[in-house]
Length: 140
Image 1: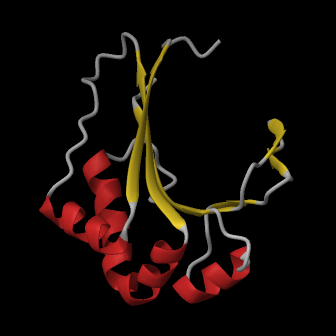
Image 2: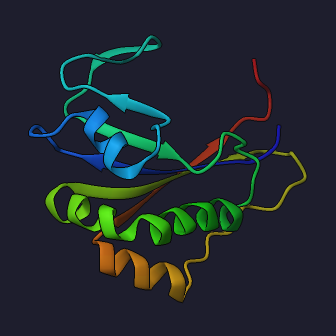
């Protein structure tokens, strides 16, 4: 199996605005939403602890971190004026999950955050979270 990276932007901890209003303000449909008290998804019946609006950089998880981050940074640059008030009022985060598979002959994916990233997340008040997973290469 190929190594995978899931990079997404999320807006969290809102109760005075709806998911649809966030989508309208940003002019984009989220990849998925979490609604406080409702199941996270069919595979995880545990209820969501808070509201979340999430946008994945791409559905292709084999795309490099750099390419995915550039997609998000372009979105931030294009939407900065409407995004900033949301990020100031609600918790906003870029979350990155890196899945590496044993014995797949690939090197470990690298994560590099450059000046463009640093300037935008500082201005917009967006945090960064990374989770690393080492997975068996056998899908069974």
